[in-house]
Image (cartoon, rainbow over all chains, first blue to last red; front, side, top):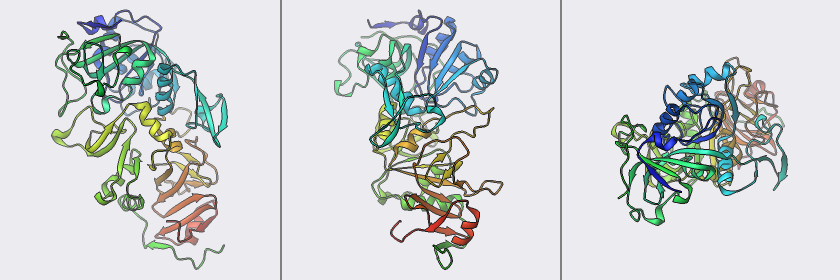
Length: 241
Length: 227
């Protein structure tokens, strides 16, 4: 069931303690900052978060980690020059880390959305990240068995949604959005723009609305030159015409 | 095979980072699809020529990446794998992360250029983790790139700060990929790794004999065809 809501608070309502939450974005591009802020505000805790990174600076996912809401991170690249909140929690033994090569992370998310029970991949074979995993020689190459990554909720950012929840992204901000939308039981999307049904060319839709449950428009979202990936205004929504 | 009398020294001095980047750029076949790793490999893009018609891939989801963005070109939605704002060239395309890594894993990428801590005589690569017990591990796309590209070129200084060779018999750092490196570009020479072991294509500021004294693996001169 697709809903369009008026606020990010309404969008994230119902996310329970202990949920597995996929959060889109690679660096700041495509990171749904406003939805993450709302998740923080709603108080849900003991979360398992799937993201490429483990938060940067003092915003978004980094704040969720700082506030002790994240029990476990599943990611490919937690350590960055400004990942101090994750670093501190990790060194204190207060957060669990499942480190996954980036392509395996993406394919495990894709597999979940596509109903695949697992797959063999050459990535990681012979390394410490394959330890304890089933391996086979297939097509003459060592391959590692990887399992799908499901989630209760996905928080993603797209550029435009229409009245059917069809989504279009912008440039490299697309990154994990389409695969997370399919992998989660409930997909919550923040967009910069809402357009009437029929206004998007069906040939150009990237995420079909079947994967989308909740849409909220963030007023004042910018795109194009000068876009920092984050808007400073508070959330509001526009009606679908 | 005797190493004396073999003259493959092509420079009187060791190469700097930019000279090395120019050399790697020159060796990339026209029309190739290429991924340049973060750090030193990024310099290679400065020396690719228009005539080469190279398409750059960035694993966060783009083919046809242009140079770094400047001034009002900067767009937070358009970054490379190092999270640096970049530009798009005519003919660029965007795709999601699973497709981007399928491009690598599926063998569609001709070359990736990566940095390394160590490369073994059989082409094992160690470039993601020092293995130090207090280090927070972070792998990113390193294993996918090492495993997926048809050719994996490494760019690095040949020696550590302590003077130890980074080309080793067997890597002591945790591996990124097994038997994946095909070529190593260093300040002191270019090495080809294949079924015939480690071959030296050219040396910079030293002779093959001198290079052999620095390295714990047997070297042989590359045959002229192996360019």
